[in-house]
Structures are given as C-alpha cells and as structure tokens.
Image (cartoon, rainbow over all chains, first blue to last red):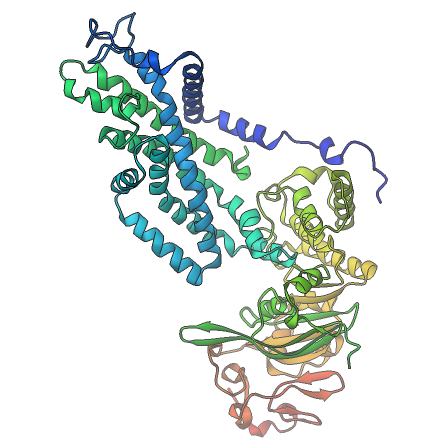
Length: 296
Length: 334
C-alpha cells in the first residue's frame, strides 16, 4: 500500500469544482440559456405561489358586472366573458403547462430512450421490431394520436400527459437509437466488454452517457412543442376539463372575442410562447454545457 | 504438450457478408509460453487485430480452440468468462477512442476494480489508493487524477489504458498496436514501460503491430500474417537474420536503417491483394509474389517447420529444399 493513507483523499486535494458546478459555469456564459432558465424558474415560482395562495374558488370567481374589461391596475390582464380575472387564471394555469412540459415529455423520454438504446445497441431483430412499431407511431399525426388516447382514457390532466407523452416517444426512440449507433463501435465499449461488463450494463453505463447531448436537445425541443400540443388539444376540447384555466383552453375560450377583447387570447398566448421559447433556449445551452470537452 | 501458457489451434473467424464470407482469420495455430511475447505482424486488414480479439473472445471465433492454461475459453459460459476476463486484458491501438470521454482518470482506472469487486468492502479511500498505486506504476502524475482524457496527450492516455488493463492483475495482455498512434519519442517510453511491466509482473504478451522494428525490440517469437494465414513464424533473431517467405523478405526490406547507403534494395510488391471474401484454394500471396512457381496455385501451402523453430508456408520452400535459392530456373520472375 502507498504511504499516503491519510484521512483526506488525494483526489480531494486536486479537487476540481463539482460536475454540476462546472456545468453551471459553462451554462452561465450562454445568455440565451440563462434567460430560458430564469423564465422557467419564474414559472416554477409562480406555480408554487398559486399552490399556496390560490384556491380553485378564486380562479372561477364570477363577477357579472365586470365582463370584458381591458387590462387595468385592478385586473392586470383584464377580465373574461364571465368577469373572471384573467391574471389569476393565467398564473393558475402555469401548473398544467409545467406538468406537460416536464411530466409528459419525461414519460416519453424514459420509454423512448430505453427502447431506442436497446434497438440501437442490439440491432438485428430487436431493432427491426422496435423500429417498425416506432414507425407506426410516428406515421400517426401527433394531435390525432393524442385525441384518440384522450377519447379512450377520458379527459383529465393525467390523460393529457399520457397522450402527449405517447406522441413524443417515437422521436426519442429514433434519437436514442441513432446516437447509440454512433457510439457503440467505439473502442471504449470494447474496453468495457474486456473488463467483463454485461452488454445491458454497457448500454446504460458507457453508451448512453455519451449519447446524452442530442437527447437533451430533443427533450427541451419536445418540451416546447408539447406545451403547444397540449394547448392545441385543450383548444379543441380534448385537454383539461373546462373550468380549469389551461392556457390553450383560455385561448380557445377567448377566440370568439378576438376583435372585441383581444387580451383574452393575447396574454395566454404570450405565456405559451415564453414557455416554449425558454425551453428551447435552455436546451441549446445545456447541450453545450454538458460536454466536458467544451470546457473553455 | 499441455505445458503451454496459451495455445491456439486452428482458429478461424469468418465474417458473413452478402457477397460471401470474409476470411479474416483462417486456421491459425500458435503457442506462447509464460512470460514470453509473441509478435504478430502483417499489413492492414490481414486479420491480426481480429486474431487478438478472438483470442480474448471479444469476438466469437467461428471455429477453433483457444487453450488458456489448458482450458478452452471458447467453451466457457458467461460467468466463467467474466472471471477469466480478469486474467486476460487488452491494450487498444487508439488511446483517443479507447477511453470513455465522460469519465475522469480516477473513474476510468477505478471502473474495472469496482466492477469486478477486486477489493472486498472497498471504501473510497481504498479504491483511490489502488488507483494511485497504478498511476505510479504506469507513470502518471497524481495531480492528473481528476482530469478528463481529452485534456491529456496521447502518451498519457495510453498510460491510462495500460493502467486500466493492469488494474485487474492480469497474467496475459493482448497489445493491439499500442504505440502506432503515438509519436516516435513517446512510442519508446510506452514500449519501455510495457517491457518493464513484463519483467516485474511476469506478464505474457501478444504484441500486434505493423512496425517490424518495434516487434524486433519486443518479441521472443514473431508471427507474420498475410490475409488470415500465418506465412512465417520464427524466433525474432532468426526471422530477421534469415527471412524465408517472399512476403517476409519484402516486409523486412521496407525497414529503414539509420545508415547512409546502408539500406538494401527495397523489394517492391506489385499486383493486387487477393480478396478475403471466399478466397480461392491457392497460396494467398500468389498474386503479389515476386517468385511465382508452378506449385503456387496448387492449394494453400501448409505451415512447415523448415528449420528448427522456423515455420514457413510456401510451396517453394520445404524442409531441406529452398527452390527460391537453389533452383531459380523453376521460378518465373515478374
């Protein structure tokens, strides 16, 4: 044994900043990503606020005397056709979009990445079967697939998440398969085999971490489109049940008053756009920040 | 017979392609004794890397036996193979792609130790001490413990690759062109390191390379391969003193010596390499051989012991008779 068997580890002595700190330091230099992160953080804060301080009663409080009011200091976003305060409703609706953005895409990403990696690594029949099923999924228009699933399972937030999650699976399967294919022939995979690792373990401990960048980009890009897709489904009436203020549902409700009360569609629209935009920006920044080779 | 450390019998590896089978390794036999080095030389695509991987069963051989200390590793089940992997390791050619770019030096060297649970109930400090020990053995400064491979130069990376292979205390290492991706000055350092390790740890090597001067420095025996066949095998000194097979002669004439006007005339090979896809049953070197005789298309020449410990596979060279030198009129020079 070596002489330096002290309490402190040598690796601590030459310690570099932790992995997450290094990622953050790299991310910090990307303005777009910081903006996206800030907006997402703000949305999360809003969600926490609404969980603590708002009840469903506040959100659907009807006031027939103040209908269609334009934005003012009492009602920052104006009021809707039943005199409900739009500001309160939009803030309350944040939870749905966040749930879709993280939950639905999370479901799709886990399932899709799992099958995609298996297909890419093992190839042959496994690959054929998984990819043909994926092709079928991919060939159905996402919104139609979502509508079918909602019709089968019944409307509700969970169903919406499952429906959207299902539509993003195929993208993850393909992306994971492609990046696994490009990594699996590397010598370090063979090196892992030489120390006795099982194939299954190699996929998840060696191959996948090296295919992560395109997956993260896919994840955030899908977050953006899923927020839009959820809004679309809600707009069509397949989303969250009616009185709940999902942003897409708000736009759907406001579309009849586009000329007389444009704020009814404008504000939810801005929020949807902000959410989608910040997801995309953050994803771009994360892709670069997660790669230790780009450490400058 | 069974006292050999490693014995390979009639090893074959065919890759199936739509046009036919690629005969990458085609009936190779050899033995290595403990603590010795077998050099395998040959041009690109002659099957030497495939051979190395088949011996470790990183690729499943199509046919043949690999007897490691008397056990046929081709017949082991997964569990037994996993145990045996600790004793048989490989050092890769390209230190730029053989290390996982997302892991630090510590992780890379600790990975085989942790995975195979070599230290029972290991704490972080135990593993780190072992890693530092290995880093010292292969000559990497301890301050580099938390760096990523892309931050290091080729020589240091190759040292990490060696440390990784050594971490399992192997007895046998396949070195698959370990220095061909490195600068000449660093090549020497790595070769010296490998030689030192062999001496200290009693390692047995298969040393795969296309650089004959490296193999001369390194090996006890040398095996020359051409398109999946062994064409000549002899102790290193004997092979360099008296190369017999036309292919070996051409290879040796390509070595540059540091002498003014001291280099013998280079033997040029013409013609095309025979396709390895279902090759015809004749001498595989016939299409490029400078000494074409009538027997060349009469089947694959067997590997014969022409002189003691000197094996050659050529129709023109038989024990006690070397047509190339004695009866040149039988040969149509090209």
